[in-house]
Image (tube, rainbow, N blue to C red; front, top):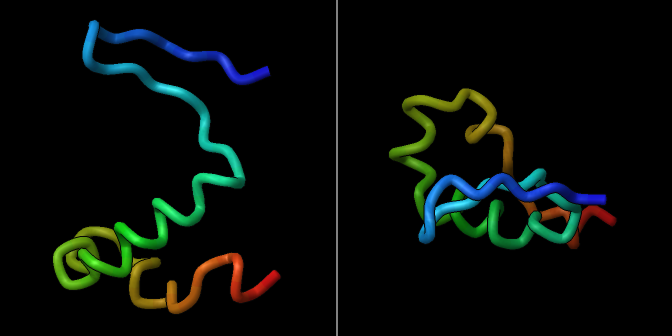
Length: 53
């Protein structure tokens, strides 16, 4: 069961699920230069899970 923590009317937090990978990969791929300055794994993230599995 996935719990949702409601922060405000416009903001909530939930645990990641496997089907979130497309949105996460798209964000990493389109923001690679910016995110790479702060997140060392960006350099090694070259393909989405759908292409691996």
